[in-house]
Image (cartoon, rainbow, N blue to C red; front, top):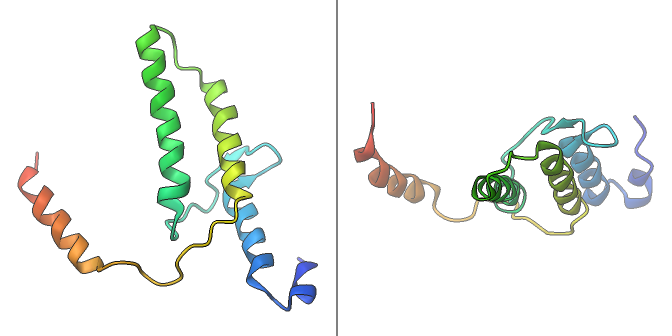
Length: 118
């Protein structure tokens, strides 16, 4: 595959980022294959997955509150729009770990280890 942006940008990460985002999010013009090559990269959980899950739960709880069926087709349209907004966003993410990973894991372990249900 030839990447026309590479010679102009001297292999600038912007061109590569656009290619990665297009590959990561949607395969097909209308997002026919969602989450192709899903990753847990910096910023994805907070800026991509969390809003998508919020949208899902908002629509499911709305349907339950109204006594109607969950509208999967409407959700797919809304989530595609949300994903495309993220895909075309310009948010800059950390390239090195943020926070003390070991401390975070220890805190979560202490919080949840006593709540085993099995």
